[in-house]
Length: 68
Image (cartoon, rainbow, N blue to C red; front, side, top):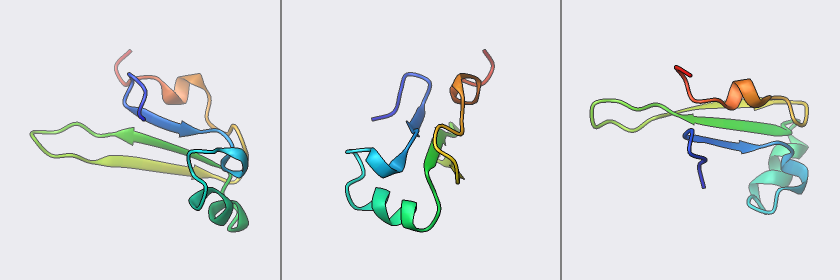
């Protein structure tokens, strides 16, 4: 579930229970962290998905709501 900032964050896919199938597959491919940000628009839905090789790669500032 996204946070109030519109971000979905998994700091370590290797042990994240929300992703029982994707997590192990992503980890095997070298991806440990994912940050998904919603992109609001004029009735259009979108997301910016960022992936990293290192666990806990994105900090609090990265996950903050834009404009704050």
